Amino acid sequence: MIDRLLPRLSNSIGFLMLFALGAMLAGAAELPLGGWIQIPILSLIWWQIRKNPSTSFRATFLLGLSFGLGYFVLGLWWIFISLHDIGGMNVALSCTAVFLLAGLLAIFFACATLAINASKGKFFPGLLLAASWVATEYLRGILFTGFPWMGLGETQVYGPFAPVAPYLGGLGCTFFVVLISWQLLSLRAHFKTTALFLVCIVGLSQLLGVWSFTKPKGGPLTVELIQGNFAQSLVFKPEGMLQQIAFYKSTMTDSQADLVVSPETALPWPETNLPTGTLEDLQDFATKNKRFLLFGILGRHFNPADGREFSNRAIGLSPSSPPYRYDKSHLVPFGEFIPPGFRWFVNAFNVPLSDFSRGPQNQPLFIINREGQLPLYAAITICYEDVFGDELAARLRNSEESANLFINMTNLAWFGDSQAPTQQLRLSQLRSLETGLPALRATNTGITAVLGPDGKILAELPKFTQGILKTSIQAYSGKTPYVIWGNIPILSLSCLLLILGFIRQRRI
Image 1 (cartoon, rainbow, N blue to C red):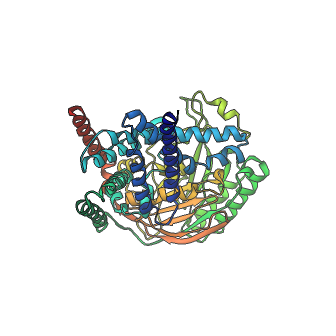
Image 2: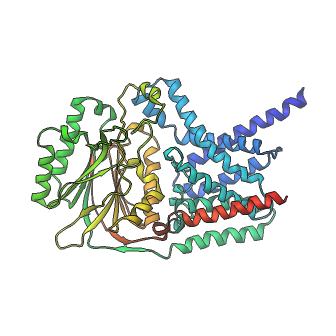
Image 3: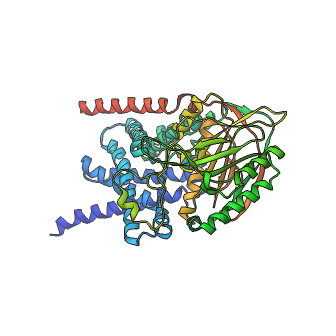
């Protein structure tokens, strides 16, 4: 009896250990040197999986699933806030929804860990695991509209492989994180060769940072980024909407900067239903004072294919150009469009959810044409869109004009006081690293910030405060290798390694 129970108890402890280590890995991302700290934690995870007595693919899959569950449950718990605290969904259903999403995402991690059983040797298993991780992370970013949130690459903005991003993007950073974390397991048995390998990989990564592919363009641009700090519940009350519209209108028309940016849905009513004179007054201010205004609004963008009428829109007003309009292209499932067959889930909310029309992927850039200066071109993203590095690189690559900066407009009030704002800030930092372009982030509750072309934070406002970030930004021009090639190099390398791994496995 005891002989039968001991293996089961040992397996249960192993699953719990991996769940805890996955949670530790997610928590480490929030630390100042999270990109460095995650590497030894990953090594512990690989060690825990490898020491399991069963080498079956089923056992490895379940162990990887346990680790992924711990990682995503802790990393995405803030979705509970939007479902329960704001959406009014009951506790049990909200927790179930978070757990199911974490489980779905953990399947990608579980599939990637199968590579641990697929090869033998000193270096090739690490290469195969890294390639497998890149492949599954790429799929996580495209299947079911994609949700590549909380990848290992984004924490490398504070890690050893940040200089890889302009060449191979976030997936390239991920490849080297997984490779190095696996090779750490060989330190005891092959100390000299493993230590030399680790030093060379990290050293070469740092050497890549010597080269830059973008350069300053024009003079500094003075900017004001407005953080209104309005509770999400106000948006569902007419008086709250009017208060928010009045605040942003007043603040924008008091500005002294070249460019003023307000957050996503700063004016939370449809463009054609705003209080009389709102857009006209803002345009008049921009024209008379030679200002450039950019703000979020609900736009009318009828899509005859699906009947959707409204869009999540950014409007840009210029002194001498027609109004600029950008309609969000990559929409959030459930938050901005309702997937087929999930109307029942949306009906469980006590707040109205959007079912937006999707804007085209390649839209014109916002032109900032100051007197006596070279024109600047800004690539606009709304909230979730800066999660998708390959899509943004493709936009820059296919644009008629070369972008000189990013402007991201976000409203994360849905997710309360959680790590969601810092997670998205790291994603924005990674996008700047990948493209070599600075970025402006205007958010409702935080984190409103200015980023340099190297992804470093140049200025920011505290979360959950109402304020204006007044500063200047230097625009840049040029294209990094990642903008030119996207994910093709790292995906090609990963596919080649996976094919070699498959051939080796067949020969065993």
